[in-house]
Length: 148
Length: 238
Image (tube, rainbow over all chains, first blue to last red; front, side, top):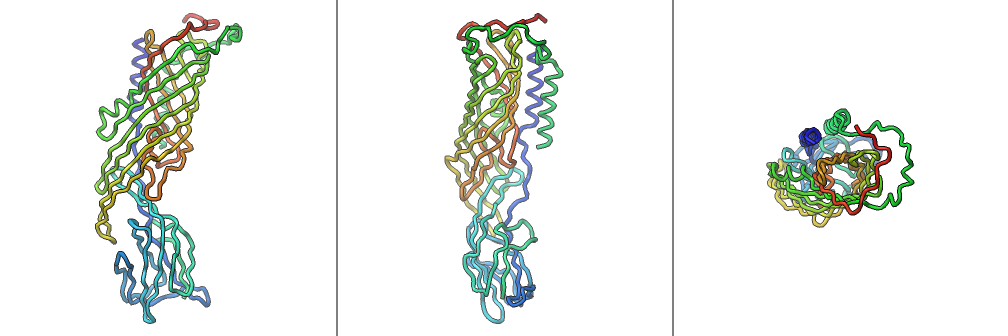
């Protein structure tokens, strides 16, 4: 009886050592990559941007710069955002909607926001193409192509 | 996950090598057990309490839970019902997470020590588990783009189900007192998301960061006989 009890006690100690140690995830995937293309040829386009900002919440991302691609942050506490691109010809807007879900990760990592179902709800460009509906965690990959 | 799996394998192998399983190498039985009358009638009910859950509740500030297990024998087959409850309370620099919920598992074990004098068990089994739980996540975070963000996310009355493969031992210690453990490979967790939140921890299943996970319970059990057990065929004294 003592031998059996000891065997089980050792097993219990071993088992307790391997319980519930979480791994850290990479966190939010809240960046949307936007690439500009020429409508006529489909080749990459460089745009002189006077101002690039978001509306509600209002945030200024860039002024007086030339870009062919840009990665913009999504407000993961909401489910939509509008970006305004101002150039010499005027203003264009791009209204995006998405699903943002929060998940606790660990006491070390905190929480993460998982953004999916990205959609182009409305825009004022000539043409907009959604490449992928899942934003990225870092500034790589393109989700949206804007033709102008 | 790999580390956890490795430790679990070491535990199982240690048991086997330590000779905790009596009679593994029993010879083929010369008496056909089919000749025993009413051999599929239950002979007793065994009720167990999980000591690991109790230990975690005592020694971990962020966990509270319990689990009981009951089984009924039908010859070498055991109907098993497990009921439990657990909750966690975790904090990080930017968030505070709580969850709480109840669960049950139902299934069967097959005993492979059919000739053991004490009816000790080495078993393999299958379970279907179901959990109903709620979780809350308070987030207060300073984002480099959006500034201070603060919100409370709630995930109420969520149901989740899963499947488990089980193995383990149950050993008679003294009269009606038994000790036993169950190792669980858990998989096929059902959808557990709401439009706002993805579950972090499902009571009864565990963390949802991987599609499969392991579990381990260590029970102290009491067996209540309801009729005399049929004789063990061809038992040889050790």
